Image 1 (cartoon, helix red, strand yellow):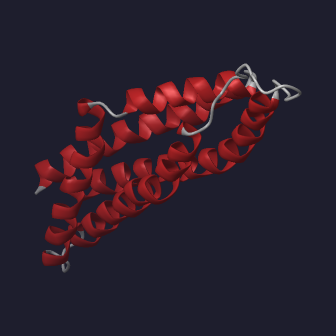
Image 2 (cartoon, one colour):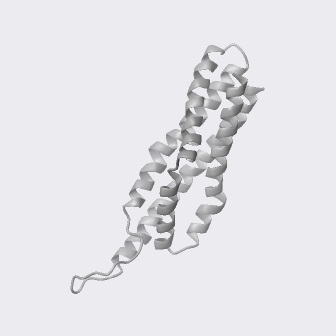
Image 3 (cartoon, one colour):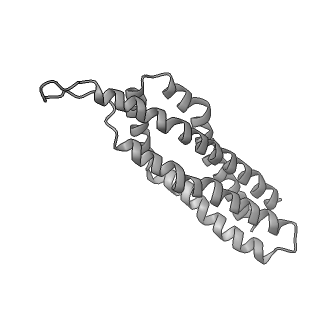
Length: 168
């Protein structure tokens, strides 16, 4: 069980590091760009994120956490049991749950946005409506996404610490 807890701790820390990079580097950089460029970049990031290695680490950690929560309830009378349950639960709810319920739906909405102005062929129509819409869409996306990502970051790092403590 110590080896599983340590593996989950390291993996949760890795996931937290990815999320922390967005807090400290990626989102501040995207916010320095015009909204259409920010949207295009985030859309590309979201496509690139769905890669086997990252998905294995993100959801493999979740699978380990489910196992550790079950084992933790079975070992509740020791000091390790509650740490396993709490660490696994924090990761499952704060990292995976928030991702599925919050960040992914925001990403899906952003994926439907056209990030740059496209030529309009209708006589008398404005050609900048798509760009203006992109600016509005980015404004509605960035703040809630960044807040949710901060929750995922804190949860992943907290889970890593709790699981490391459980591993002894």
